[in-house]
Length: 452
Image 1: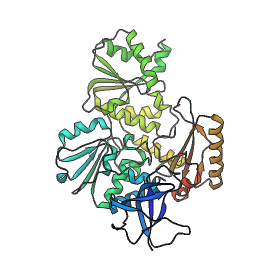
Image 2 (image 1 turned 60 degrees about the vertical axis):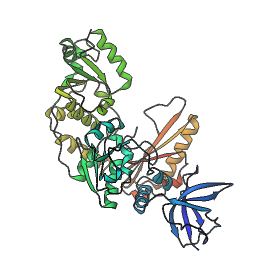
Image 3 (image 1 turned 45 degrees about the vertical axis):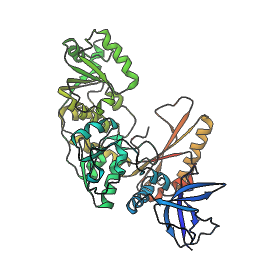
Image 4 (image 1 turned 90 degrees about the horizontal axis):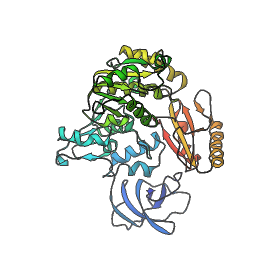
């Protein structure tokens, strides 16, 4: 007798990844991996996807598959899903469903039969613009990486360092990694068009250190000594007073209104300046003469291992928007990062980051996992977090497996307490049983963009 392991498409405890069913000999349609089937599930009927077929008899009673609908997933899609379950510690169902047709922001400019290239762009807002200039390609944001095309030959990823490629929903995949794995499995050509590579990309792929146009550093400490305690520094006031076309970049959403009020007090002409946050990087072709980053210290002082990397990336993007000069306002002009930026040479920055990450076991020298738990009750949240910490510390080893104490989320959600526990390991295989060991209400994110 044959049996099928099935990812049942219904709410279930994520720790129960697959369910085993008998394959009746009298089914009209053969059961094969990737097929959509109907199965009994408790007191009702549910649909699912065949993960694999086996002759091994399970040590428990099984029910028969009721019917076979059609094959949904190809062999290559199944291989990709199986790799994803190991890479992202995710359930088979999540790794299959994220590949279903119709997901993501895409734009077909011609007959799909004629398309041979997928081009991924960092944000959905850029899809339509790219589609106008690349009519023979499928353009899409991160989930378009799963698009199935009969004559696909190449995948292109624009700005693969952009953190928008990390999906914020289970299975929390990274589109660049999916593109790399899919190219490997399907024999596709792959192009990665970096602008300011991430530290791990530079290290793993042996990329050249990028050069940027040096920004000018504005010393806010000196401004404060002169009695100016606002974000409108003298250089910014001069640009506004001279009616120069200027964009004021504000990274912190909380500070945007404050800075807007301070600028209004100096009587600036509203027709000569604009205030933007990170959303500006989705606007293709946006240009101005000058850009002033008003609050660069909000990233400099962020307690996250990617903070300086993101600051460098942001400066690189701003220099593409400013036709003339980018100004960085900071109260810490003596910081070595600003010296690196002011020189336009990032060799020292990357060398320092690689050294620090190697010492403290951050990617690419270790696998990082962020476990997150949210509850309305603070006591419940802390008890659960401490339980997980105790469980993980039993496996802890100072050389290969490090566990952080529970810590609160940087972003607060009203009415909820959210706690994180971070795990770092140089042996990823130690993480394989993690999803089975923790409460299903925990969120597991492998190599997160931020620990906060």
